[in-house]
Image 1 (tube, one colour):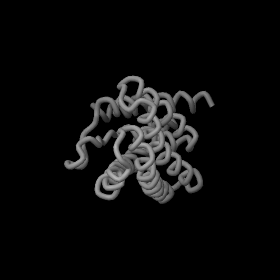
Image 2 (cartoon, rainbow, N blue to C red):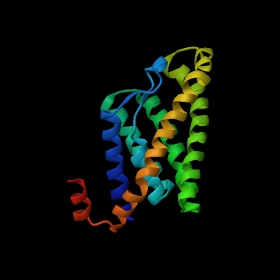
Image 3 (tube, rainbow, N blue to C red):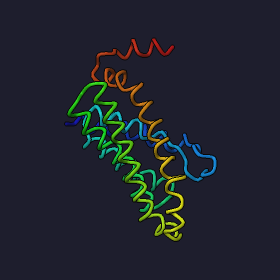
Image 4 (cartoon, rainbow, N blue to C red):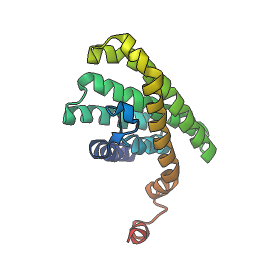
Length: 186
């Protein structure tokens, strides 16, 4: 159990660093929506240790990101947790039931689509309150902006997670000696 919290905390820290220092717009017409790759380490935690660990790490990052940047306040924390938590929760839950490459693929795919739907609804509810804009304005942005952004962001994060997960998982299990891994990097 102690190992679970240590890894969840370490991967949450990595996620936070990625979110703070790596960000760029994915959709030129919506440059205010920035891609941040911080979901990748949290997805790995969720696949490796289960959806509870993924949700724990997502909550840590949501709170720390809002506190460190001042961006979004409580509404930003909520939106971050809804997006990341939905994605990692669904992916981790489905992968736990089918621990195969196919299970990981379908878990990530289901997480991607469910997260996109949750964020479309959450934007309709939260964004008018948070930004003080009419709901009709947000509704006009759901299909041309919010949905494509979340699909693209989620697809990038899922793809990188699929490409890296086995190596990271093997490293965490100790089947890849640290010395051999560091020699490959040189």
